[in-house]
Amino acid sequence: MLVLVVALGIMPSASAGAAQGPGPPKYVMIRSYRFDPDPVEVTAGTAITWMNLDRARHDVTATDPAVFASPELSLGDEWTITLDRPGTITYTCSIHPDMRGAIRVLPAAAPALPAVAVVTTPASLAATGAATAAVVPAPAPASPSLRPLAVVTAFVLASTVGSLLALRRRA
Image (tube, rainbow, N blue to C red):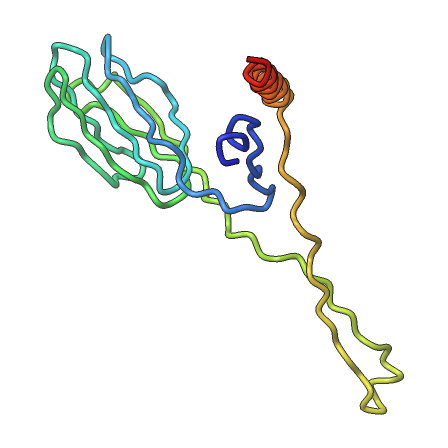
């Protein structure tokens, strides 16, 4: 059964309000005396790795604000940092000051809170002490999404298995 579920591609999709953690690591290549990509955009908490592809030595030094400085990087060397504060940071290679770059750190999404509705009685009843409050839970998340290609693949797989079983019974 598990194989069929995986073959069908029926997996719950992430809900729109789900928390977004740090994204996959980002890489900045140092080549031809420039940083690529520039600017680089990451979610707070995402690792950024610079890799020197030039024969010349380079470094990565934040200029505004001055929050980090790498050691000198030789050909093939890498240096990684993780930034947790949203904002824009400009940086340069202190060895080659014409080399400049920027990092845009986006805030991580806040954890999703359950949607609730609070229902209270009218103020006229509150004076009598009959006021009540009820918490109505949010509706259940949407059903798993079906991707069209996964549905077609599942149909072909099911048809093939059915045909093979029918042939085996005849034999």
